[in-house]
Length: 291
View 1 (cartoon, rainbow, N blue to C red):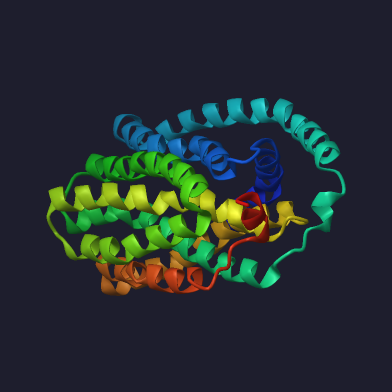
View 2: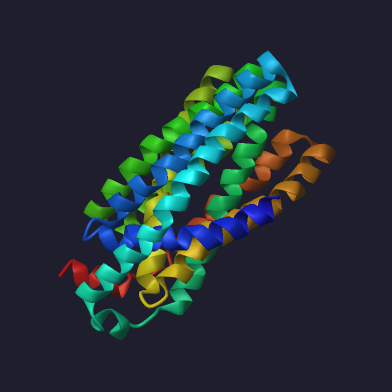
């Protein structure tokens, strides 16, 4: 199911992300952070809503979640055709000059490695935070769902801050700074067994981790100005697939060695991410825009 979801995102999100890229003008990271709010808010509200439905109505209560999905599907069916109109309009304004720009494939591949590290961390947290709260910190099921809501609520705020900072100080600066912070915060989070401290660290993780969302997507689009759809497909859809595929492997580790062991496996991924991020050059498009 996760792989299919990734394929679906790879098919839909490039179209939407290209539209966001074209209509964003100069503040692309800010615009992309606004673009991501909907999905991130869904991650924040979803655990709280789902946990409440399960507690009140049992498994049958999850059928209620079909209604918003159906409504959004109907809405998108009418909105997606407008994306092509935006891109055609943007193509007329930019003209052939856009296609004269050179794609930077080697940096994009390294950037993809950073995106995959971020995705694995994201899905590990999404999968194991409720279990960690229940089985390690000995909290209730409702508290486990609330922990996810706290993480993603902080993530929405971090996403907005990250977009603004990236447009002000540069994409690479925000990416490197955020992953540098995670190098310290993630091990501290896995190490602590105090609920209050864990909750405070969870807020910081949400803020920092989601600050990288829009800078990574926009940087990928800048590296491949002639293949913005492909860049969006990798940073959105393929990233979801990679993160989802690793979740069962981490689950296997959790089954044999405990949930903390699974989280320790991803706690050091920011080291790899920052190593790759340090090799990333300024995208030519970003350099030209700042002159």
